[in-house]
Length: 191
Image (cartoon, rainbow, N blue to C red):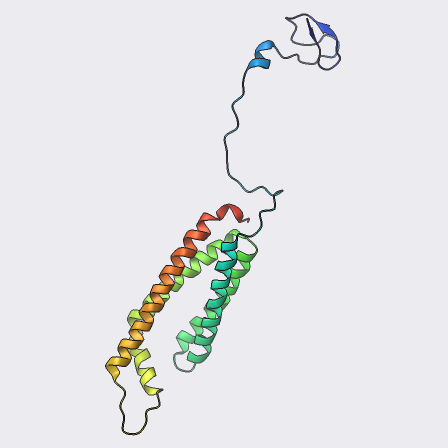
């Protein structure tokens, strides 16, 4: 004999609905049948407090350091190379935008950080390979040389080229690390 789980009435074994309260009575097969666990699907749970991963803080600090570099480059080069100075100041605005989005764990902030480093790599490459002569000329014009001495243009050119190549290499390495890290933490970001 079985009993109704709702009203407690004694029932025959073959009954599937309680005649008193119309409660469905599970059959023996329903009680024994194992259920498969639900498939795991990673997703953002709005009820859970995720916190900010330490790496996101580090990426934000790196971008903030870039703001300092862009500001100093932009302000000092506005008179010498206005286009370069203006582009540096535009990067400052873009970096502030990316930091705000990253700090608040917004999806667009992660995408902005990725775009920022991609653009930085391209700009560094363009500067390294196209603006070298202009930088050498500016360096020679703005260097005070004691009377009777000459500036070695070849050495100056090589030093500036080494500096620009090193900046490009640093941009590529940092950009690659930032892009890989931000992409690996996408589940922490919200719209």
